[in-house]
Length: 130
Figure (spheres, rainbow, N blue to C red):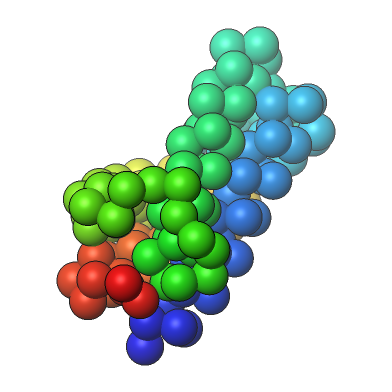
């Protein structure tokens, strides 16, 4: 189960990093994020996407390290608390994305947030590979 959670979480966080970097760069899929009201995000939301990409990169490293895919830059004692934070935040993100008026945001955001919440939660509960 840890291996599957690790693969799904790593892939999900990698996608989120790329997605948010694309939004920050001005790609036209803003209808899938931040309320879904604009195809190309304005400057402040691009900055928010850049910050989200950095946060998602932390998630990617945390999940990959917890799953045993990489040797860690993070102290092992930090993994479970960080995974718990990611699980809780992405569980809330499921709710937020589900409430979006944008169908595209719901179709993209709900499954992605669910994968990130569940994989982070499973790795937090089981302690991952380490």
